[in-house]
Image 1: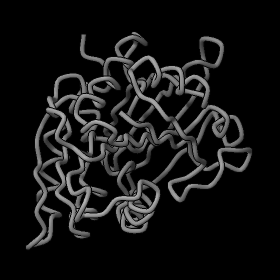
Image 2: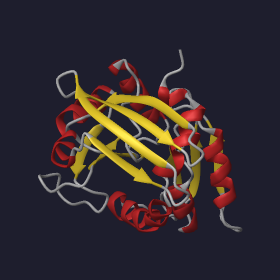
Image 3: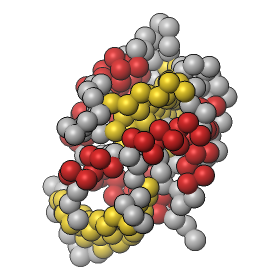
Image 4: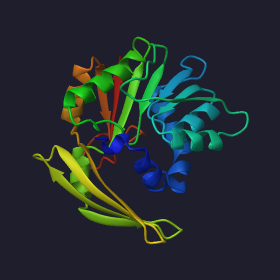
Length: 249
């Protein structure tokens, strides 16, 4: 049985709500924040892996800044959009691949895992293996940056039910429940289009506290794990916007 994160129809249906024009535009400032937080320099640390890259928001922004970027995603429709969005003169290597299978070959100076893109797999050991796979893509000592909505922040902003609407009238309804002693979130997502057709699925993934994510990264072989509350490097405290960790290979 195909799980939600392996279903191309899911990503095509809900992609417009994930990658709104506002989020695409915000990637420019976020790219600058990533460069500062990781201390990147295109002259000294040129090669960056963005996995998964989605529609290429950050990969394109970083390539504009002189980095040699590889954007990897399992969803062909997202890669097609990324290629269409890539400006003339900006080079990004777009590749289709799964986080569990992509062989980075230890050639990257930094690896990015953004926008809550870890914790999808039912077996927690498989999530550890995915992180270890990212570690093997890095040069020795290179940083991995993971950006998720942490459990501590989620407890502050949690809404069980909410809805969003696109300019064309498409409506996204979400009914979210914390399950298994607050270790996972189950999201019933319903898409209703202007023509009355609908698409429904259950999105289920792990939700990590800073301590829990730290343990997974340690198991995956990462050292020197530092935690922040945003891509700008603010503290991970009660005001944190995200759970951002920078870990060395």
